[in-house]
Image 1 (cartoon, one colour):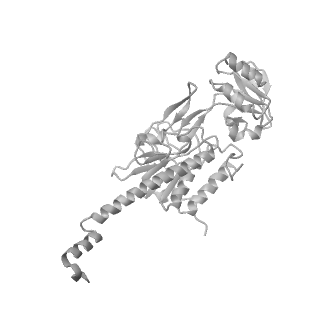
Image 2 (tube, rainbow, N blue to C red):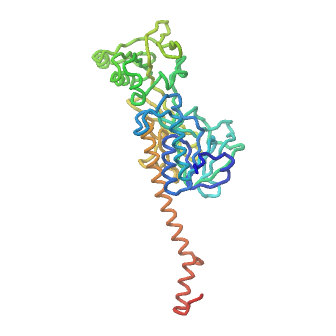
Image 3 (cartoon, rainbow, N blue to C red):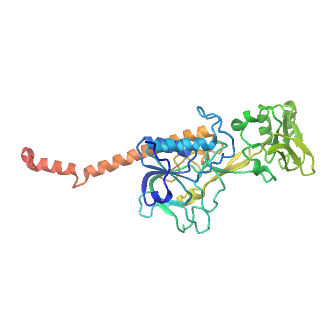
Length: 386
């Protein structure tokens, strides 16, 4: 019999799980699979719209090279379900400590007092799922919704790509508008590739993408003027530099054909590289006392992330995080590995808890073990039948 992949939101309402995974991309499903195989009761909550859904395929994932993002998610869900893990497609509006002091309380659906929801999704260039961040979700009072409970939480909510505000960019994102050469460089090899400068790392991007094509153009747009040394590097690699702000894209037959400056001049371009601001999807974490912090590179803030240890442990006891919510440049296979590491750490923590509980139960005054020892002391060899 094939395992049932999903549960309805109301089916899980009121139930307690040893681990709830918030976010069902590579990190979340990788962690859930490990926990399910460790015979832990685990629930995965995800809105079901992967951040990398616009892409044709996931690349660099050994054994799954080129698999469509939605297919990877579907296969991952089926694998988790095969081992008894449960999955619900829903939004998370709040996560916090259980008022009764027994782990955590997670609310599905409903609205916070700010009228916002958090999707419970995940993401990386090709990693966890994604979508618009909830902003204030997770720190207000929830109106409506279903409640589930957990002893431990694994947060794999991913990040949000905030791309430059140029007309047409959002519509081509994940198709010809790209950012990760290791994710999509091969697919646009030997094409005319443009790099949109919006920060100090634009020259670095242009030099990197030159590995995949000898026809690379750096559009200075709103980025800083390259230094003399950088201009020399660009010239040495035969990378063209175009001054002026980009005003839009030229698309023909649903394909990117060029980049148009504000003044109207258009340059041929089959792919355009941008540098998104990577914002950790952290709204739901505020109710847990976790806040995203900025990540700087070369003096430039490239995004925000949730600090976590190598095993995914956070500063909040009982809460682990993995994937792009903690590592902004993680690819799908790396996010999956991070989820597995976090799951192993969670299982070790639960084993320690189970052992403590067993020892305390053994020492309890009215436990079976205590009664056996009392009988032995009082009756000795005459205790038979007692």
